[in-house]
Length: 129
Image (tube, rainbow, N blue to C red):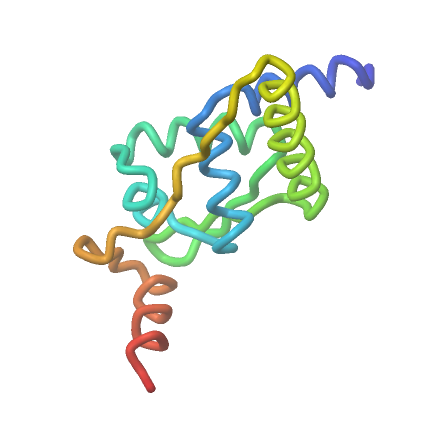
């Protein structure tokens, strides 16, 4: 495949705020299920799944099935660098125009816990000690 075409497909997959947020959560939290992403992004399961599908098609995320649960993670560590450079570039370019960007904190809503095995283990560990 032509390198520019592949690069264009990658950039197109990144050109959506929700997909960037999903990648940021996966970078920070590691392997995550859809219910975990739903909670953090305050979006419906169908919407999150649609965005994950686009990210998977672009080769940015991979999935792992465990029974009824599907867990997603970054396909490669190079995506971390890509996210860092994209954020810094956006911030620098905005500053040239006298703008200051803000990025919403992507936090888990503890009042609505995820019940998947990964999140349940994290909750159990955090409540111990």
